[in-house]
Image (tube, protein in one colour):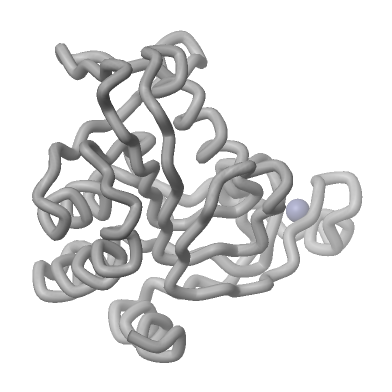
Length: 189
Ligand code: ZN
């Protein structure tokens, strides 16, 4: 699946949003990828999961771990494609943790799966949850990489699309300077 085909799915689903957004990384951007709008369609979700599964099968993962909420649906699909468990970490008092009886052991080879990676910060944080259990994190996968820093990620990353959309800290954001109201995507966007 070519990057252009993936972006076409996002366009078809109205998932490429234009405006002034505060990303989960805290950075601001004029574009936002609302992957939930793509993943709501089973045929798209299955297709993206299968392609990511094909790209990561050689890593021999025993489990897929995703950060909630954004990573859950695509994580489930990649787990299905690889025939392994798919679990997720979620925030409790600001810290990412495993809940609901989910467990990882030193025998686990963990693939971290997200929908969109921006800085790599949440990928790194998700990997740390697995490492704290003694599990071996063998790689990361995402539908779209918005310009993560490989050094920061410190993991092999498979992404279907490499998209360099400018993102700014609030104090350098041109849209903030123009006093355009900022939206935190999620419930509203
Ligand atoms: Zn801004």
